[in-house]
Every structure is written in structure tokens, then in C-alpha cells.
Image 1 (cartoon, rainbow, N blue to C red):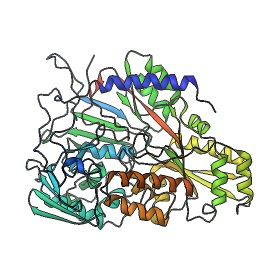
Image 2: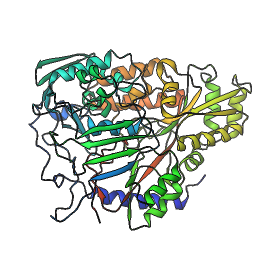
Image 3: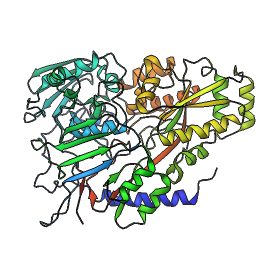
Length: 557
């Protein structure tokens, strides 16, 4: 199917909106008289900062542009409260060490009230100070971090290196099945050398170590608060906001942490609501019940682009949404069946049916971030060929039985319906199992994956590090249950490679293996239109979808 001119035209309009948002970003303060604190210089490792493939064993002497500037006129009036509609992913649990405590919107929450040791400056790939001010390593296996000494948890406890040790222990003894376990398990020991110095010893050499520390669900938690209250103790962080109230799958209410160690947000309170009915979201924006919405029906975006009372911004598009074929299932383990599925698919059609005017298209056959370094653009994109598909199906073990395709969320469900229709053309009988996010997470967890096929986003991120979580064994995001010996060997070796040419070749080979095995088929990318009332600013919208909403503001018109 050809890409429609209407689709491309709308996406160009949305990129213009994003450019306007980006123009609001900078290094200046929040407009409340505060500005980002400068950090101490990071110490250099052997070979200098540029020696590390991830951008340096010791990174950067400046903080990122985390606060978008607001108008500086004295008579400007800002909204004290903002009503926000989150994307289609309902927030089920506010706990980064719970299998249900995952999902894009949940990570946005963690960004609000937790802090991580370091931050990622996505445009440059640089690692920036946050709770840690400087860091060193001599061998890419043992890392020492110096920590801030002016940080307090929301319950008044002072943050120290012992909280980092406790966070590591809690994650690695929690039974697994959640994303932070995948990361913290790579650390063999975490030791407090003193109250403000932490030493990590990784199980192997790991040149990508810093990137994992930037992910919101790898934040530092307060063990004492969790022990005192196993439910609400997980709400206690050191971040710019506090969790004021939470109702699972309904809303999260935040209030500003006026004792925050960093720049204070302008907005005093935010309430994030999950509204599953897309049409209701549009109505709430139009009648003023909501100030900003992170996902609307594709058919409704155009009316807001043309409305001077609203602004439209674009986010996402980095990660592919893929069809995962679970290798624990005998039929999915049949290579001929997988090839039949591959040749039966029209991916442009899936993309348009799933995302309409927000459709972005797969350009090659690599399961990889659109702009992530080391992308292998030589992997071919297999076009639909129903004759070949039928030949592979006839050679497979398929005998007309029902195949179950599991997914959640509106656009994934629409993609599943397109796949169902396309596979029916060669005689594959597909039924769709629609779940909510917690149900989908439980159905696809590594230890108990009950699916045959599933459609979900590959959360790869802007660093190759994400590939380990998607195709390592075991790993919570490895929904195809890939357990290939060559892939396992590569993924184990890659964090230890310090030569950039070797890393590039290895990453590209890893993408080739994924293509050859054909257990995870990239289907489509998707832009996400964010609609806000006029005067909104302060958003940070990285391409990996991990939006930073802490400094969102609205100028009252």
C-alpha cells in the first residue's frame, strides 16, 4: 500500500509543532528564580572520556537542559494546576519492582517522583550528573560514584549511598519478572564506601553500564518507607513531585516537592487521568476538562492543528511495534510457519490501519531504533508475497488450528486485526486475545509466557543497550522467547567490547540474527500527537518515548 499524501502532510505539520516546542527548551531556569545547579567535573578514565563506546567512562561537566524556559515578564500568570490525560497505557501499580509496574506512562510517573543517579542527554548520547556528581572507572567493571549530599526523600530521610545499596538488594531479591531486575542483576555488588560514595562491581566488563542508570524504573527507592507501608512506601522518592494520591488504572495526583534539591517546577499540582474512551478525550480537551492529552484518535488531531486555542506536538517514532512469535510454542517454533507469516504481511497496510494519519513506516527489516547507533540498514524489508507465503505454509506443521494473537491498547489491537485479516488470505485462522496492560504483561512475562503470537512495542531506546532486554535470555521484554546460542554469545560479549569497530560489527550481526530467525517481525512505527491548550511548554519529548513532564507549565492567556 502506498503512503498517503495526507499522512505525510500531517506528520510534517506535527514536526513543525515539535520544532516550536524544542525552541522553548534551553539551559535557563524554570521562571521561578531557580536554575539547574552546576555539577562537579567528572573524573577521567584511562584513555580519556572519548575512549568508552558509550560516550566515556567519566562523562560531562554540565547538567542537561532539563528546564524549559518560561516567559520572563513579571506579569505572566501560570496555571497552578494542570489536568493531563495520559496515553493508552493505564497505570496499574506505582512500584518499579513489580511486574505490573511497567509501561510508558508508568515510567513517566517514576520520572516525576523518583531520581536516578545519572541522566541521558539524548541528542548527544552524553551521560549527565543527577544524584551522582562524578564517577570513575579503571576497567569498565568497577565503577565509583560520588553522590550529592543535599538530597532528601519525601519522608524527610536524607539520601545516602546506603539507599543505593538497598535499592540494588531489593531489586535483585524480588524474584525477577520486572524491568529493573534485568538491569540490577548485572551488578554483582553495590558497596557504600562512605555516606556519599558508592562502588558498583559488575558481573562482567560493561561499557554500557551508565545508560541503564538513566532509566526511570532504575531509580533509588526508600527501603524504610517500603517496609513501613508496602503499598504507599513505593511512592516515597527524592523527585521534583510527590505522589499525593493514586487510584489504580484511574488517576495519579502529584504535588510539587517544595524542598526539591534541583530546579523547582512552576506548576504546583498535576493530575494524570486514564481515559480509555478516545472520543471522551477529545471532548474533555474541547470543553476545558483537560489541559493536555498524550493520545487522541488519529482522526481528531487535524481539528486541533487548525484551532488557535491549542498546540500540537509530536513524540515517539523511535521504537518499532513488532509481531512476536513465541518460541516455546511448537507451531511458532516451526521455521516454515514463521516464514509463511512473514511473506503474508503487508506492513504498510498494518501501519495505516493501526495509526491512520500518524502512521510511520518500516524502512528495512531490522528490529532497531530508528535513530539508534549501529543500525543495520542492509537488512531487507520482505514485501508481501502470498504465493511464497502459501508455499511455506504448505511445508509447515500447520493444520488449520486456531492461532491466538495477544495484545493490548487501541492501536496494537487495530494492528492485530489487520494481521488477522492478512493471514486469513493464506488460510491461517487467527483469533485476537485483547487484554489490558497488566494482563498483557502477565501473559508475556519470561517465566510464564502463555502467548503464541503477540503484538507489542520493542522498547529499544536510544542506546543499543535496549537490545539486551529485548533479545537476551532470560529478559522481561524478550516476548518471542528467543534463545539463540550465537545471539546469547554476542549479547554477553558486547558490553565487554571497548573497540568501536568491533561493537559496530557485533551489533549489526545481532540484527542479522534476529532477521534470520524471524521470531520478531517489525511491523510499524507510530508518531504520537500531544495536544495541549495554548501556552503550554516545558515538556521534554525524547524519541524513545520516555517523556519528562516535571517542568510542564501553561501560561494563562
